[in-house]
Structures are given as structure tokens and as C-alpha cells.
Amino acid sequence: MTAALLFLLFGIGMVWFACYAWIRVRRARTWPTVPGRILERGVGALMRGRPPAYRTHLKYTYSVAGQDYTSDQVFFMAVHGGGREQVQQFVDGLPAPLPVHYDPQNPARCYLLLHPMWWLWLTLAMGLLAILMGLMLLVVALVK
Image (cartoon, rainbow, N blue to C red; front, top):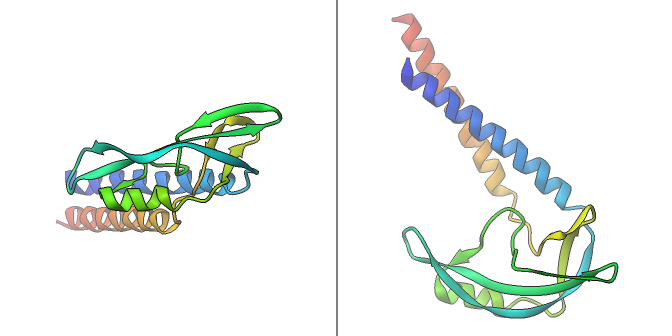
């Protein structure tokens, strides 16, 4: 019975997060863009975990309504990283000028790229699968 409840709670949490992230990403897709200028680019610090991955080191500036802003946010909802060569290729391949998406309500909030939507669908599918497993375990426990 405990395992069933844990699966249900985990699944509900995953589904909630997938829906929350989908709403935020959908809203951010409508943000306007302005040209940005790269100040620094390269391979950043080593991130925890296996295999070893490095952070993207990117610093850029942009202007909205005459106000200058500086940021290092690459993706809307996550930190970007990978192998040393992969990160270097990524930052070297960024265009100049750089299109910066900014929040019209708070221009200091910005991003360069949205993550692909497949990770949201995967999170949703994992959550629904966990809920299904929890329900199946609950039925088996109640039948006994």
C-alpha cells in the first residue's frame, strides 16, 4: 500500500510539474526579442554528476527602452551544459547579433533558447505511468 501511495504522489508531482513548465514555456514563447551582444563566451565550471559536464559560460548585453541589461541565461528553464568540446562548439556557433527574448513585464528576465518540448512530454508520460502503476498497486493491495 505504501508503494502505491508513493507512486501516486510521485506521478501527481511529475504531472503537475509538466503542466506548470508547459504553461511557463508557452508564455515565454511570445516574449519579444531584441538584438544582444556577446561579452564573454567559453566553457564554464564543471557540473556535478556523471558523465562529467561543463556549464556554458556566456555573458551578453541587450537594451530595452533605453535601459541596458546583462545576463548569462541561455535556456529559459535550465542550465546548459555538456562535454567540453560540445559546449565550446555551442558557444562558438551562436550568431552575432544574438536574438534575446525578454519578459515585457520585467525586461531583466530573458533567455536565448527554449528547450525542446519533448522533455515536457517525457515528464508528463513518466508522471502518468507512475500514476497508473500506483493505481494498479493500490487495486492489488485492496483485492488482497
